Image (cartoon, rainbow, N blue to C red; front, top):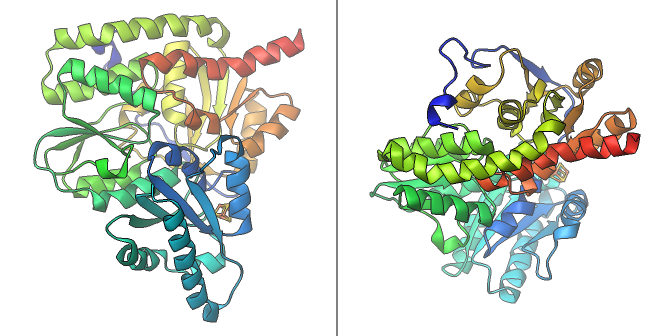
Length: 426
Ligand code: SF4
């Protein structure tokens, strides 16, 4: 696939100027605490202490149950109901829990206090608690805080809030570098690092880093590529530190990956011939892997409920590389700037919706009778019972899906529910 093919024809601007149905109503999404499930595996010497209720503890246990290691890197400090007079005790209790944790776990170098939404937690000032605990536990441990509350954040915004908390910790950097922003599986990170190296682009750093001490620097010579579409606040803070965002689609599928790499290659003035020679093999591997799923997916109609903010890039990939037909693409938030390149590539006529009014969306979905519905866990079972094939959007965040070598796996995630349904019907 050549880079020239990536630009939409002059008159075809896809969904760049398409109207967006804005909806406000009941939401069916996980809260930002969920982000801890992938973030705790990414930053290997960090610990996430949720300051929350029993509900928060249960959510984390059931969502992460299958992934807990012998020494988990997250836990919940349960703050029971108490009045304002009891807040001093709550702070003391928090200090005691943190001291106990850190003395038992000297491997922890970065501690996040993660806020939640129960009213007794909202009354606690976690940023002051973090400052206080920093004084006690410096220099060995850095204590930061962010909110994963369901009132303020959805599912993937927990990662945005966590990375935004790291930005003020980044040292100033004067030299030119590429900063890749967004948690990626290590296998994906290593593949991308090799591609940048082959292109002569560097130094390349990643946010979040694998270890707290490797937190990258940032400054006016930093060029950043967003690896995830849900990092509005993190990007805003990095821009305020001088970093310049390289506009690109997201690295999903062969086309997205090439265009994403191209943005960095253009900024670094990489020779087009070198670019083609470095990216050709990955594109060819992806083409072979995608061909295996095209028969199953081409022409199938797909409906996205708003959940992960990955919906628009996924719809673009499925439409352009596998011939699927996006009927409606819902997203919790539509960041026009960060998604401009994606929207231009999305087939014209795709219905876009932002925010959630679950009953109306369900009505539209039933009316459209799509072949596949991408939605949260709460909607999947009822929709399956009504005869729809569904895909859980949370799986798309837990699975390595970015880059050339994951394109086939990404297609398979959508093909699998259709194959299963065909088998059930035989
Ligand atoms: Fe529920 Fe709020 Fe806790 Fe999330 S933070 S589990 S929405 S109580």
